[in-house]
Amino acid sequence: MNPILIVLPILTLLMFDLGLTLQIRDFGLVLRQPRAVGVALFGQIVLLPLLAFVLAWAFSLPPLMFVGVVLIACCPGGSSSNVFSMLAKGDVALSVILTALSSIITLFTVPLIMQWTVGYSGSDSLGGDSCSLPVGNLLVQNLLLMFLPIVIGIGVRHWWPVAASKIERILSRLAFPALILLAGIFFIQHSRTIADNIGVVGVCVTALLLCATAGAALLSRLFSLAGRQRRTVVIEVGMQNAAQAIAVASSPFIFNNDAIAVPAIIYALMMNVVLLIYVAVLRWRRPK
Image (spheres, one colour):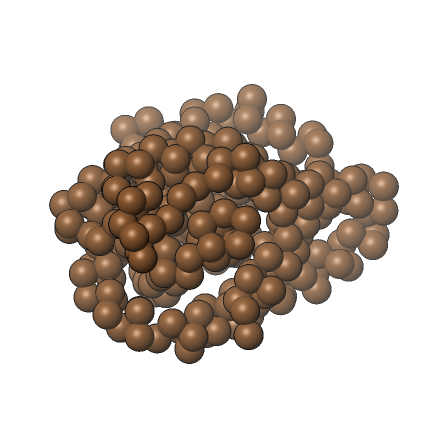
């Protein structure tokens, strides 16, 4: 089975589901909580790709793995972060708007950062291991699979709120199993590539995850964010949209190279483990 036949519909449904949770007035949260939104977006859009680039360079990753690590860092958010924020007693409204904003902003930042990364890593001139980035195709795919479903979801929520609520309940329950299915298919089809790279790449992406969450926690404290906001910012910066990264890596219109998706698969696994531990610690520390 070609994974792209699963990943593209999953990504589209996740973005549609996100749109169903939003209303136009929700974007007013940017004005009501500008400091929290600004800190989180800085962590997602600036800090994460910078950390990924430095770590990929420090670990001397092969070019395709280098590109893959930076790619997963450029794809923040995802609907799962909203669930984790709820479990951590965070600010769920802030989590939802951050997921929406980062999804829209990365429509444009991903092509810019990845174009530079591909050139720097040398992966555009490696013969059999080569990859190139058609920026126009990436922008079009992002608009069709991410921006348009979000807008349609917002429209359905506005015009048919009762139906939107019912659909959202169903999709929210399917989101996590769908991602697990996607990860499982990639593990089965590319087990050899994953096994060959899980050592150094696994350590690299785990270091990225830990540095991202620690950096988000530090920024939140420096800017004196409230406890609920801090927890949400840590989760939003730490959680990445693995479906988006896999879609970019494996799409026949963009990289068309499943090897680039390997860091995203490994990150998705470690991300859930680390953040589940984080949520468990938070709940254990809460006063009875």
